[in-house]
Image 1 (tube, rainbow, N blue to C red):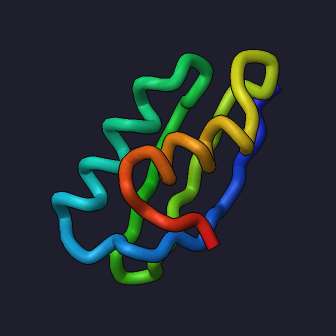
Image 2: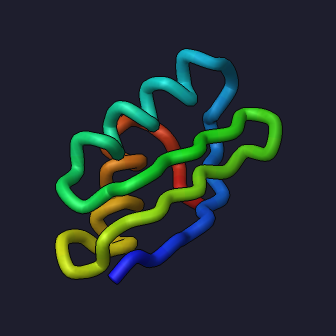
Image 3: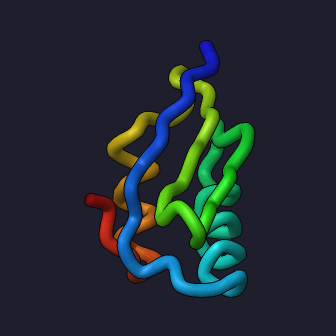
Length: 69
């Protein structure tokens, strides 16, 4: 089943940051869409909850060097 989450993320400063986070998250099995926004300092993710979860998504963002608020 598809779920969507919106996470406030500190450290998104440029298009490269958006790309970095998007690439990291799209490597997770079950992630359907990613929208990272430097303007809003947030990341919106739609994912298949039978394959991944919000904790794994938050961890991937942290592993990429950003802070999930």
